[in-house]
Image (tube, rainbow, N blue to C red):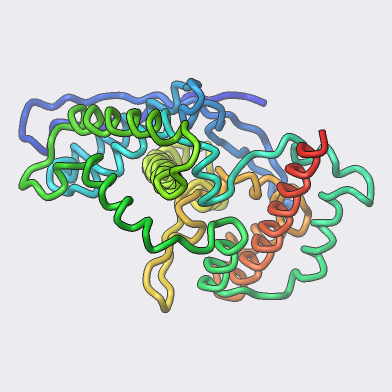
Length: 341
């Protein structure tokens, strides 16, 4: 496995008409050649360890993702004019102090210790069984809305008590007291305010017995913090893919793959815009590795990228949904094994 450094630039001062302050941001990408159903190309990715900053771990890429996102927001003027943009930036920072296990009670995305290919050698392995399920159903189709709803039913919490809404609104107001002001505070000020509130609530509520509804609300915000980091990650990947394409590291096909795999995909449906995978880029969810490591998963992905029609997209979504069910089953088996130990 190799590593490549990509440098991006942003002018954080352009929106305020001050002197240009062109900044550079370094991203350290892991890279390896993959074979996608006969199409060989180099896959680039940002390593997950340290990306969320939880459990005291960090990485240079985490800070670059946050800083580049904010520099672009300053450059475009949304940092001062759009409260939801600043709120997203602040939430992304809270991942460093988030309830990572709690966020997964809202949307399951825990990595499993078994790896992807380690158990794929014998015909009775989970990976071989996933391939067989995908092969049998490779011509079946699932709509955007069905995929969105059914994947959420498998990976997400199904319902929330009505009583949690008031607690949620109260915490939101304390985290972002400037929401209805005519002008946003600076990013540093907003982060300081929210971090103080968040750390206090984690200490007073999150670590004590009882308080189940307030703890649920903390979990909800922890999940929103991860989704906010994914938005920053996606903004960085738009620029990273463009830079790699400009340097000749990606052709049209591999550029399409990286754009599809690494972005928080927002798609139009009859129900309006949908975050297809609930605010998570496919690349950052463990299901991606299981799916892409199967011959049928690779074939469905190649078909979608080469022929982005509704039938190709719906066959891909059906396959990915099968992999989602498989991942949820693997996760449950892993939990059962831990309970027996």
